[in-house]
Image (cartoon, rainbow, N blue to C red; front, side, top):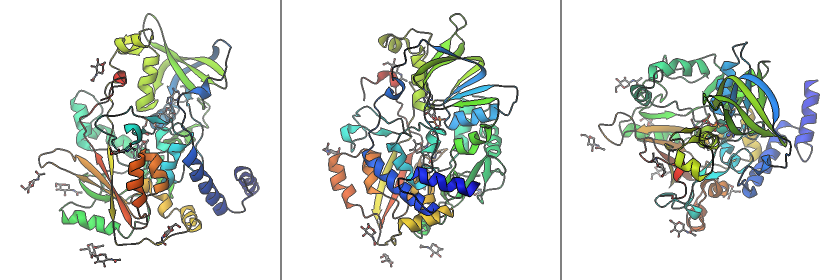
Length: 470
Ligand SMILES: Cc1cc2nc3c(=O)[nH]c(=O)nc-3n(C[C@H](O)[C@H](O)[C@H](O)COP(=O)(O)OP(=O)(O)OC[C@H]3O[C@@H](n4cnc5c(N)ncnc54)[C@H](O)[C@@H]3O)c2cc1C
Ligand SMILES: *[C@@H]1O[C@H](CO)[C@@H](O)[C@H](O)[C@H]1NC(C)=O
Ligand SMILES: *[C@@H]1O[C@H](CO)[C@@H](O)[C@H](O)[C@H]1NC(C)=O
Ligand SMILES: *[C@@H]1O[C@H](CO)[C@@H](O)[C@H](O)[C@H]1NC(C)=O
Ligand SMILES: *[C@@H]1O[C@H](CO)[C@@H](O)[C@H](O)[C@H]1NC(C)=O
Ligand SMILES: *[C@@H]1O[C@H](CO)[C@@H](O)[C@H](O)[C@H]1NC(C)=O
Ligand SMILES: *[C@@H]1O[C@H](CO)[C@@H](O)[C@H](O)[C@H]1NC(C)=O
Ligand SMILES: *[C@@H]1O[C@H](CO)[C@@H](O)[C@H](O)[C@H]1NC(C)=O
């Protein structure tokens, strides 16, 4: 029964009938990487605006309504549904994951598909200087699993001292000691890390991307020469270099949708609606409490009521947008947008990005070319370049000041053949000059890429000031 079904699936999914799994994947990669080069990103939510005429239809009542099945929403809905007597509706604007987005090394291509909302920054004065119109990309997942379905699968929990700082600011329950048990509970970790810092038996598989490139040894030795240790950044000390721990299972992406939600979707107390855009949180006039949400799907608009709670887990960009559309935000801005005010709050005013710079170095090493067939064969065995998160082998956390409590910079090492100039241009939005002078000169088989990420930036973005970018 099962093998028969599989054969049929391949016939439907491929444009040409494929006889083996390997053929299917080779064709899928060729097709999807090609499509991404010409995919036109949406400029608005038009897909949800196609001519519904009816007034709002009732969608009934649930105890909890969760908006967004991304990283946070998938975990919250899964955990809440473990309590039998709570009924939950989870509403997601995107659709299901697919075989292509499971391939970690293809991460940049998902940004040019229906899996991405397609945002850019406003034109900048002091940053994004190499980008077309001085606009950086702001990819955000629009699919079950959210951004965890299109991200670089690098499993980095964050520095203990940062959590402790949050707790010290008055956020009870957020100290390192408080959150560590939940990280461990979530994990099914295969890494050989520090004792007491990793969990086994949880939903989320964590493993090393294998095998590392031969050049990774040079990266590690380089950091040892600089007196940095080599170890486990999710363990006792974050500082130093380490092999990447990735959110993958036998080389395939483990989004929070795959890892968590898929376990819970069978439960009768959880309903998941996909391809549904939440447009408003409804509130009770007098108590100002959230009562439910309005959403659009399949040309109809619905109202669903929440008996207990409405959880907004729509991500760093869409959560403040939805709050503001619902009248929760700064008075001045909502008045300007003619949105009736429910609560005057500084929503959308403290966005912290983590800026990333790509440094490319030429080596005298040449990575032997692998055929797509060979790469796919290895991927299907859970190995090789296609399984690599962000196409990188390892990482390092660095203190740039002697007295700093926490590392200020994270670097990551991506070996030869990790850079793909054909998608780099779109995924970074490089302008014509930079593409001609810089991208054209890259020799993927010899060049290595060092990502440099600033960890504690001072800059804060302010959504309510979008008309005057600085
Ligand atoms: C390209 C890229 C690479 C990254 N690499 C890494 C990495 O290697 N390691 C790492 O730890 N982190 C990485 N991140 C960051 C990480 O993926 C995100 O921080 C995390 O997924 C955010 O989770 P979230 O729940 O806040 O939002 P999301 O996961 O983005 O979820 C929000 C969900 O809400 C849905 N939604 C939004 N608005 C609505 C609406 N109005 N109605 C219905 N549904 C809605 C969205 O479609 C989405 O599914 C990366 C992110 C990106 C984009
Ligand atoms: C691209 O960016 C560089 C760096 O800011 C700039 O010198 C160049 O003029 C830009 N080219 C185009 C075509 O905008
Ligand atoms: C890294 O250092 C070790 C120990 O000194 C040495 O054996 C090894 O050859 C070095 N590797 C590279 C690639 O330099
Ligand atoms: C962590 O760092 C401290 C202080 O530098 C050191 O004593 C300890 O051995 C380190 N632990 C691990 C597991 O590397
Ligand atoms: C964001 O912009 C608004 C409107 O100009 C301003 O009132 C507010 O103070 C700004 N917030 C921050 C954190 O800078
Ligand atoms: C690359 O250069 C280094 C330093 O000059 C040298 O030791 C090494 O043999 C060279 N490797 C190759 C593959 O040419
Ligand atoms: C690898 O293949 C690419 C594309 O076919 C080619 O441009 C490049 O020269 C090849 N590199 C090696 C080392 O064979
Ligand atoms: C840190 O201290 C060491 C030893 O005192 C010194 O050599 C080094 O320059 C300092 N580094 C920075 C970034 O201040």
